Amino acid sequence: MKIQTQALLEDLQIDGQDIAVEDRQPIFLEFSAIDTGGGFKDPMLDFSVSVSSIEVQNHGESEVRLTVINPDDHNDEVALSYNGAITIADEEINGRITEEQLPKEMIRFIFKLFN
Image 1 (cartoon, rainbow, N blue to C red):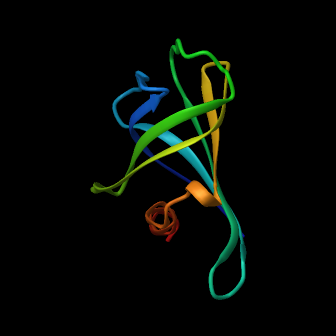
Image 2 (image 1 turned 90 degrees about the vertical axis):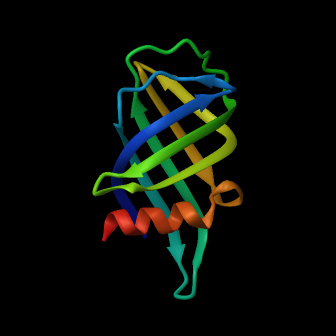
């Protein structure tokens, strides 16, 4: 199963450093997992966001914190923190959140966006 959607990025922090993002900038999300009928196996969430300037060095493992908002309901938001690999290239940040760090609240949020 694969779900591609987008939300609005409210806040982004990498290794304790706030990253300047435009007000409610789009963030592209791709959730994938094996649907077992009673749950998901090996869920992961890939995200991509463009930034106009970034001073964080691309050093692989980072502590990332982000808050995303439902574009159709600005009161519906979810925040998460994780440690994982990110890539920074051409003013774009890409990351992957794997099963052990992917909260159920984020999965529910993605399904609400998709419906």
